[in-house]
Length: 88
Image 1 (cartoon, rainbow, N blue to C red):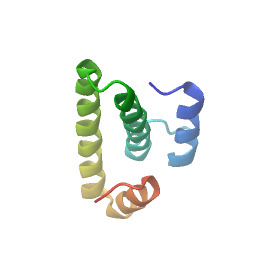
Image 2: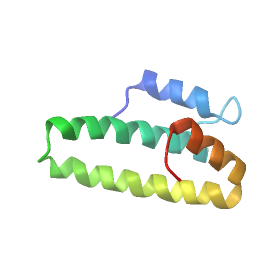
Image 3: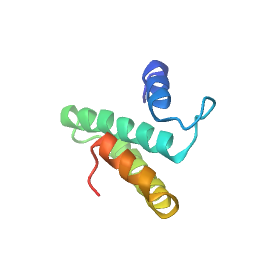
Protein backbone atom coordinates (compact mmCIF):
# COMPACT_ATOMS: atom_id res chain seq x y z
CA UNK A 1 0.00 0.00 0.00
CA UNK A 2 1.37 3.38 -0.99
CA UNK A 3 1.44 6.24 1.46
CA UNK A 4 -0.73 9.23 0.49
CA UNK A 5 2.33 11.47 0.04
CA UNK A 6 3.93 9.08 -2.47
CA UNK A 7 0.61 8.64 -4.24
CA UNK A 8 0.08 12.40 -4.59
CA UNK A 9 3.60 12.80 -6.01
CA UNK A 10 2.86 10.14 -8.62
CA UNK A 11 -0.45 11.80 -9.49
CA UNK A 12 1.27 15.20 -9.88
CA UNK A 13 3.85 13.70 -12.21
CA UNK A 14 1.46 11.80 -14.51
CA UNK A 15 -1.78 13.82 -14.49
CA UNK A 16 -3.24 15.17 -17.72
CA UNK A 17 -4.96 18.23 -16.22
CA UNK A 18 -5.05 19.91 -12.77
CA UNK A 19 -7.93 17.82 -11.35
CA UNK A 20 -6.91 14.50 -12.90
CA UNK A 21 -6.59 11.59 -10.48
CA UNK A 22 -7.87 8.63 -12.48
CA UNK A 23 -6.58 8.76 -16.04
CA UNK A 24 -4.95 5.66 -17.48
CA UNK A 25 -1.46 7.10 -17.10
CA UNK A 26 -1.99 7.90 -13.42
CA UNK A 27 -3.46 4.47 -12.67
CA UNK A 28 -0.64 2.69 -14.50
CA UNK A 29 1.98 4.67 -12.58
CA UNK A 30 0.31 3.94 -9.23
CA UNK A 31 0.02 0.23 -9.99
CA UNK A 32 3.67 0.14 -11.06
CA UNK A 33 4.84 1.69 -7.79
CA UNK A 34 2.64 -0.68 -5.77
CA UNK A 35 4.00 -3.67 -7.70
CA UNK A 36 7.57 -2.52 -7.00
CA UNK A 37 6.80 -2.22 -3.27
CA UNK A 38 5.27 -5.72 -3.21
CA UNK A 39 8.28 -7.14 -5.03
CA UNK A 40 10.48 -5.84 -2.20
CA UNK A 41 8.08 -7.41 0.31
CA UNK A 42 8.37 -10.81 -1.38
CA UNK A 43 12.14 -10.80 -1.06
CA UNK A 44 11.69 -10.83 2.72
CA UNK A 45 8.53 -12.98 2.79
CA UNK A 46 8.65 -15.50 -0.07
CA UNK A 47 5.81 -17.67 1.29
CA UNK A 48 3.24 -14.87 1.51
CA UNK A 49 0.81 -16.35 -1.02
CA UNK A 50 -2.10 -14.18 0.06
CA UNK A 51 -0.29 -11.02 -1.00
CA UNK A 52 1.02 -12.74 -4.11
CA UNK A 53 -2.55 -13.11 -5.35
CA UNK A 54 -3.07 -9.36 -4.92
CA UNK A 55 0.15 -8.73 -6.83
CA UNK A 56 -1.03 -10.88 -9.73
CA UNK A 57 -4.35 -9.00 -9.82
CA UNK A 58 -2.48 -5.67 -9.92
CA UNK A 59 -0.21 -6.86 -12.72
CA UNK A 60 -3.26 -7.97 -14.73
CA UNK A 61 -5.07 -4.67 -14.18
CA UNK A 62 -1.98 -2.70 -15.21
CA UNK A 63 -1.66 -4.84 -18.34
CA UNK A 64 -5.30 -4.14 -19.28
CA UNK A 65 -4.79 -0.40 -18.75
CA UNK A 66 -1.63 -0.46 -20.87
CA UNK A 67 -3.49 -2.29 -23.65
CA UNK A 68 -6.30 0.27 -23.48
CA UNK A 69 -3.85 3.17 -23.64
CA UNK A 70 -1.99 1.59 -26.56
CA UNK A 71 -5.23 1.19 -28.52
CA UNK A 72 -6.45 4.74 -27.91
CA UNK A 73 -3.27 6.84 -27.78
CA UNK A 74 -0.04 5.12 -28.76
CA UNK A 75 2.01 8.30 -28.26
CA UNK A 76 1.01 8.51 -24.57
CA UNK A 77 1.51 4.75 -24.23
CA UNK A 78 5.12 5.00 -25.44
CA UNK A 79 5.73 8.01 -23.19
CA UNK A 80 4.42 6.21 -20.08
CA UNK A 81 6.32 2.99 -20.86
CA UNK A 82 9.56 4.93 -21.28
CA UNK A 83 9.03 7.07 -18.16
CA UNK A 84 8.24 4.06 -15.95
CA UNK A 85 10.96 1.88 -17.45
CA UNK A 86 8.61 -0.93 -18.44
CA UNK A 87 9.19 -3.41 -21.25
CA UNK A 88 6.89 -3.31 -24.26
